[in-house]
Image 1 (cartoon, rainbow, N blue to C red):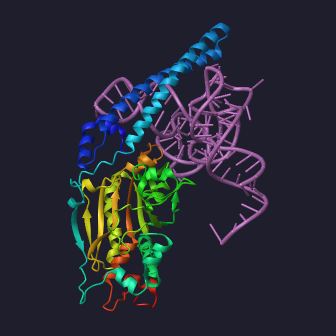
Image 2: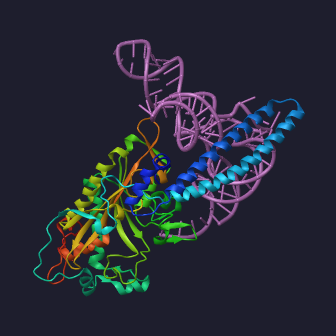
Image 3: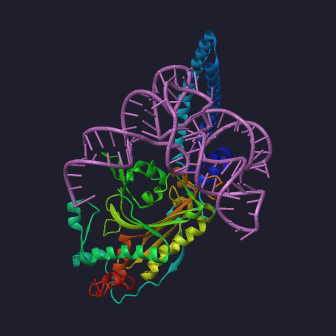
Length: 421
RNA sequence: GGAGAGAUGGCCGAGUAGGUCGAAGGCGUUCGCCUGCUAAGCGAAUGUAUGUCCUAAAAGAUGUACCGAGGGUUCGAAUCCCUCUCUCUCCGCCA
């Protein structure tokens, strides 16, 4: 949520920023609702003040007639208050629901562009590998060697589910361990293992709700939601908290499964394990003082990239333009890894700075010292990394001519004596 | 799932014949004094949200709300009533 005061005091500026996002946002309507709300609030507060005074007078008044006269007066005032506050409640509800759908304001450095075609690849890392043979796709290798079972995945769950077997199941497990270990041992993140199911406030707090409910799984019985990313439970660990400055920055690395409905047109991205309803991910989450957010974003990106560097995988960094920013982000970079079999750049991480946008929704604050007032923190996160696509990259980049996978050096400790999958 | 107890400010903990309670007291914290330094002692300050006035802004002044959440009774509720949530203890069940 953006600060309503921005709309109140700099309406035209906010409108211009929203234009950069190429979305239509009812800023004028919000502005007017806010005006009306404040006026009503002022009036009803004045009435309450009068009521309070009268009530106190009743308490000390001796004369019975005066007492009952004043009681009648307060009753009349209460009726007025009731009318005003009903209206106020309605206004606030409308205002709030509109505000919850206002996206974050982009950072000034984000290039203006209408959609993903205007994202900018800003750097390439690690050479693409040269093959003396035509590299196969991960799904060809997986099916041929019985390392992925797509049919049984569909049988037990449905479309876009698969079963990893043997070496591939182990590879995923090794990658999870490797990623967590790297972030904890070399990048100073604190590992957390959060619930995979959360209450509704969490999804509102990080901004998935109310706008994106159609992409989330929910258990109607308990009212709990399956996490679409570890960002949700981990950021919300600090919901409604005021953190002391010396706790910041908080850096967490968390493994979770992620669940998304991914209501794509049938046939898109259906091959392989690139996009499923359930996937594993190691997520990096930071809670920081606002003035450090931009440098923390840089180091977060570097931490995510480090995984790919240690695996020696070719990848590139993409700067996301305004039109392709996610709802909650003020600035975002994607990391894409190259997979030679399917010949695609695959998004394995999306690193975002949310500024105070999520902190406002989730009410996460900090105090610079004991006497200073609480301010909103900035939150950031990025995948570190998404498992299926790193799997694809490892499988396809490390394949041998005869369909085996050479274990990358960084993963050796997780494979013991095995050199090939 | 069954039975009982409870939910007050950063923490502990008063406060039920409803009124002057945003809330005693203690601890902690901050600032000042004192002291060779530290401790002790003394003094002061110390919640959040939101509105209005003032200001270039901050500061400041002032209003309102908040004693788990929501609703009700009343002129008036932390205090009474209802619903819900959570925590603790005991029993049952279970990986």
